[in-house]
Amino acid sequence: MSWWEWYCSLWTGDALQCDLSWWVTRAIAPPRWLTRGAKILVIDANPNDLTELLVYRGFDAVGLDAINQRVVTAQHSTDAPVRFIDKQLALPEHYFDLVIARDLQIYRQDLSTTGSLVASANLLSCVKPGGRLSILVRHKPSWQDRPGGHLRSCFQRHFQHFSVNCDARFLGDGWLRWRTWNWMLGDQPRWGHLLVSAQLPFDTLTRVQWHELALADPQAVLPACCAWTRRRAAPAIVTPARETTYTST
Image (cartoon, rainbow, N blue to C red; front, top):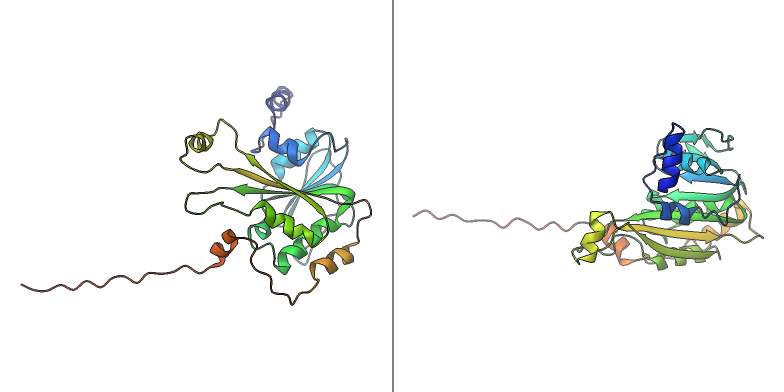
């Protein structure tokens, strides 16, 4: 959020809290593309802050905590038909103008698996024709484990299964973060977010058709999407302790 939004909300007596910077929130929910009153679904481990911020900007936003199976409806926001039925998430079809999926565990795994494709099919099916699906993934790289997350090409190949235009870009942390200064000094790679935006066509598919694309050719064995995924999936190699022999003198 920007400093002006924080100041205005504090002046009214209800300060907004959001851990995302203003350029990240502007990228995932561009004001030029969204109209006032647009329906937005936020899927996050803690969707309260981002949902409140979007409602403050004039959108009809609803948050979803998929881990604790909790639906968060911000003040002055209408109830969206999002439910948990037998511990399974039920999303409406062609309902939201924008779906924001932030740091979901399914997108921290191999993107070429059937489970990740089915998860994307569920999210794409609840987006209106011409709407957008935005995926935000936190990147925390280190010198020993680069790049610290998926590559842009991983998501581009992932959405090629659905024939959907996908734009992936990296949004680095701000200049006030000490890790950014370490990156400038060459001490560590830069931290930030990977933003993936999938733009749906106006002649979008039904939920059954999205799932058919996700489950197409299930017997095909696809390699892991990137080396980072292969390293995470590989079992740890345990080095046996060296035996020490003591001799008496």
